[in-house]
Length: 92
Image 1: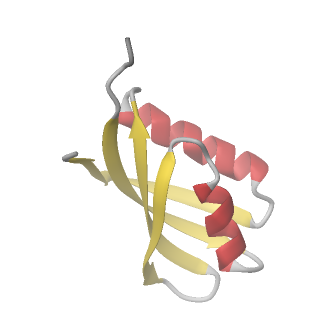
Image 2 (image 1 turned 90 degrees about the vertical axis):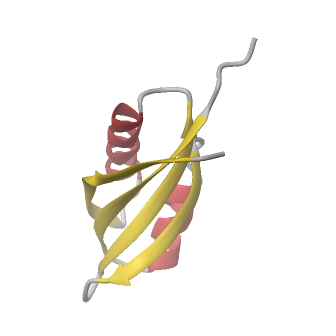
C-alpha cells in the first residue's frame, strides 16, 4: 500500500554565485521538490525563493535534508537559510 504524500511549501533565502537559473534547476532536480519560485530579489546574488515539496516524511526534517543536500552538492550555492515560520501545508 502506498504511503500518503503531503504537499508543503517553505521560503528560503539563498546566496549564490554564477547563474541563478543553474542553481534553481539543480534544486528542482531533487526528487521530492515539486517547484521552486523566485519570490523577491534581495540584492546582488541573493534571492528569496519558495520551495514546494511532496513528501510522506515530517516536513521540517525533509527541508533540513534538502538544505544539507543543496549545500553539499550545488557548488554555486553559498548559503541557504530556511525560514521555518513560513512552513505551510498545502491542500491537495
